Each structure stands twice: as C-alpha cells, then as structure tokens.
Image 1 (cartoon, rainbow, N blue to C red):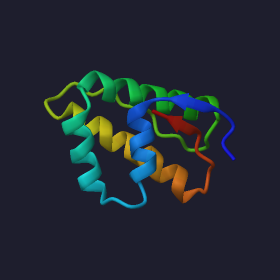
Image 2 (image 1 turned 90 degrees about the horizontal axis):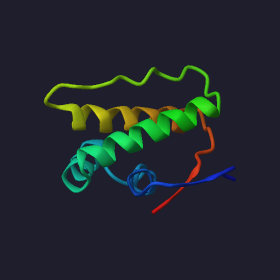
Image 3 (image 1 turned 30 degrees about the vertical axis):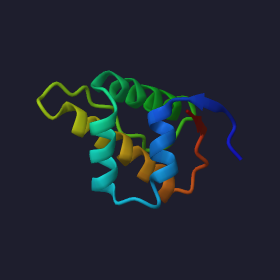
Length: 96
C-alpha cells in the first residue's frame, strides 16, 4: 500500500495509464494536454519524492533546455516509472 498521497494530475494520469497505453502514445498525450510548466513541476516533484524515499540507483534528473524539453522531461518521468515498475517498488498514490 502507498505510504503517502501526492496531488499531481499529470503523475496520476501517467500512473493510471502506464500499464495499458503504449509509451509513445502516453508521451504524446501528456505533451499535448499539459503545459511545459506542469510537466516540469511533475518531473521535479517525482524525482524529489524518489530521492526522499531513498530509491537505489536513482538517475540524476537532467535540467533540459533544448527545443524538445517537454518530450525529454516526459521521457525522464517515464524512465522513473519504469524503474519503479521493474523493481516492484510501491508507488505513491497520486491524486488529480
């Protein structure tokens, strides 16, 4: 069971669709629906939560600045979800 509730609509959407939607489709949907600021906030929040949880082998979050920043940020979020999934780590409960 999740230990904490976290309010973030973007992370809630990804978590609820992660297993049932193709990665590329999920990334495209997120980029089209959410603003660059919402994507950046979600990425920062998710990496901070993983850091607090002391997840082993946590990749360092990259500060993106190029034209494809949104795509790269969503890919970073997806990579962290994949890491949680592959290690069978309980995810936090994300709320809309």
